[in-house]
Every structure is written in C-alpha cells, then in structure tokens.
Length: 463
Image 1 (cartoon, rainbow, N blue to C red):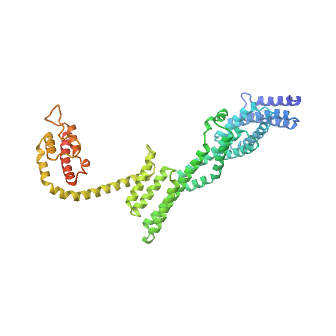
Image 2: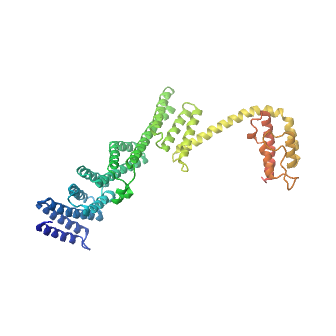
Image 3: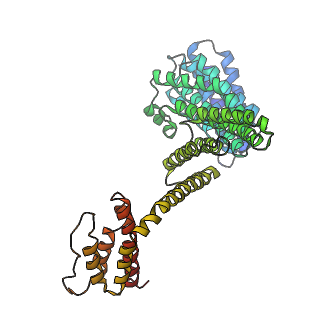
C-alpha cells in the first residue's frame, strides 16, 4: 500500500489530469496541464524510497505521458512540436523499460494505452512534420529501448518504422527514375544495401521471438503484418537497382551505337564492340528482373545485329524473343517504343522473306504455266458453265488430291444447284496451302483452279 504522502501526491496529480481532460479545454492548455502533472510525478519519483512506491508512481507517470503523446497526435504535430514530441517518446520508453523489466509491478493497466499511442505515432503520416526526419529519430529511440528491454511490441513497432523508412526511400528512387534521373535513383538504392540486410535479419529475429499475425492483431496492427515483408522489400530494391543499372548501360550503349553509325570507318568496329558489350552487360543485370527493361535491351541488341553486324536472322530471333517476353505482360502492352520497333522489325523481316519466296516461286511458275497452257485454256473455256457443272467438270478433269469425297457435294433440296457452303468445300479442295506438297505442276494448276472458283464464289456472295 502506498504511503500517505504518496497517496496525497497522487491525488493532487489526479486533480491536475482531470482539469486537463475536462470538456472544452483546448489542446494547448491540455498539454500544459499534462506537463504540470508530469513534473509533479517526477518530484514524487525522486522521493520514493521503496520499489513498490516507485512502481506506483511510474505506472501513473506512464499513463499521463501517454495522454500527452495522444494530445500531440490528435492536435496534428508540427515541425515546432517535433523536438518535444520526440523527447516525450524517449521519456515514455524509458519509463516503460523500467516497468517492463520489473515484473513485480503490474503493467497491464498501462500497456494497452502505451501500445496504442506508440502504434499511432509510428504508423500515422503527419503532414505538419518532416516525416523522414521524424521517423529516423523515432527509430533511434525505439532501437535504444529495444536494447534495454525484450518487449516484442517495441521490437515490432521498430520493425514497421524501419519498413516505412525503407519503403519511402524506394518510392523516392522510383520517382527519380521516372523523371530520368536514374543515376541518382541508383545511388539512393545502393546506399541502403547494408540497412536492407540488417532489416532482413531483424525479420528473422521477429520469427524467432514468436511474433506473428495473432500478436499484431492483438496490438491493433493486424493490417501491417505480412510474412517475409523484409525479403519482399529487399527484392523490390534489387529489381529497381537492376533496372537503374541496365538503363545506365543502355544509355552508354546507345551513345556508342550512334558513334559507330557516324564515325570514320576505321573507328566503327571499336565503337560497335563497345556498344555490344554495354548491351550484353545490361542484359546480364536485368534478365529475369523487369520485363519492360529486358525487352528494351533485347530490342537494342537486335538493332545492333541488324544494322551493324548485318545479321538479319540473329536480329529477327532477338526481336522475336523481345515480343515473346512482352506477351507475359498480357493483357497490358509494354509502354516503351521498343515494343513497336520489334513488331515492325519482325513484320518487315517476314514480308521480306515472303517477297523472296514469291520471287523464287514466280521463276519456277512461269515455265510450268507455258507447259500447262492447253489445260489452262480448257479451264478458261469452261467459264460459261453453271457453278454446279463447272465444279463437276473440274472434279472430272483434275480430280482433287486432297482428302475428301470424290464427287461434288450436291444440295439434296435442289440437285440442279450447288449451295455456297458446298461450293466453298470445292474451293478448299484446291486451296494453294493444301496442295503445295503435291508437285510443282499440280500446285500451279491448283492455283489457277482456285482463282477461277474463288471468282465464282465472290459472285455468289454478291461481291
């Protein structure tokens, strides 16, 4: 039981606290009265002679300190408030450390209020503060408290504050990269590597301490619990660092590529090799990290092989590889110009191959046309026949070599006519794609038959 003098002192403090929390009292006056209550409790603390009395005073002190922190939070702390706010946080953590390390003192009554206040101060975003500086300072105080006591809650709040700091830096780096300042972004990311490694180790300790989703939910932090949170953040840092480094190498490679296209012929190969080295190094950094950037690198390598090394087949393979990579983003298309360049290059390559094939085939086709001139004349002379008679004539003179019926399909409702559907089946029997492997002469004859049938089918459709 507390001494008489202590009971009297605590009653006086209670009166001050009640006056601070009365309805209508402004936030500034509330904070001033709570400071007065804290000063009174500090005087009582210095007069305590027993550990029991000290525990009683510190428990009450913690309650009042938490109320003062809450007053700062609800009032919206400003830059001018930050020094005192951080000082009060440090004082609260010092008192809590003593209470937590002395299990003979009951701390259940004040632990909930403390955890609510620290949680809100750590995880809320205050527009009036320099949040980056504030969070760094708060983390320092949490680290100090964490070294002095083994409270898993303090450890968890420290973990989340560190995550917010590192995540904010990542978003800032991404913002710089989006503005084209990839060198600054890369420097910012590299400067956090050691801190990220330490953060990942902290997550392992969190598992060791048995801090899981249930504990977070109990502390009102359930929305913040994510398994392997540190490793996921570290992975995001690694990806963004790879993107920045690859972008830097792409930039240097482009400069060397342009030089190779405009310099003296004697220097061309030197610049070309430098560009190739830069592009290959960029690919090593980005492969499997970011689809957009990897696609851009592949597009540059393809362009290099097409324009400098004059290797269209290799360039085509690289362009295809970039397009196939972009397909993994479906249904979203890549944002970069590289994708359109790849699609156009692949189409141009295919058009060139098709034109070459047609040229070769035309050289083969002309002599065959002369050889088949009598048969082609016979085909043309039959143009006056009806569609059904013409179809039967073709089947009789040039039986189809593809799989299917040996006779022209007849419309059962009108045996004197042939339906569009049946006529289309006739055309398909002589289609060029289905007759390419039947010999060159038959291929040429199939082409002529197919053209004659298609012209009639277009008339049937009213084209």
